[in-house]
Image (cartoon, rainbow, N blue to C red; front, side):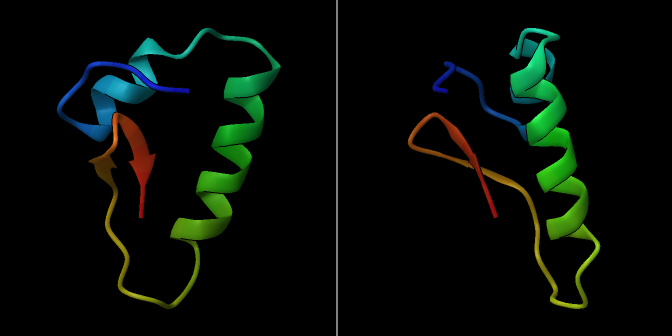
Length: 49
């Protein structure tokens, strides 16, 4: 899903509250829960790590 935003929080705010946001939040929790030093970024108008 592509949105014209500049921060990860703006991206998360733009997503409709339906199954897509639920699944994205589940995957996001798994990714951020790893021991790797990751940060969220916006690349190609999408959320990336």
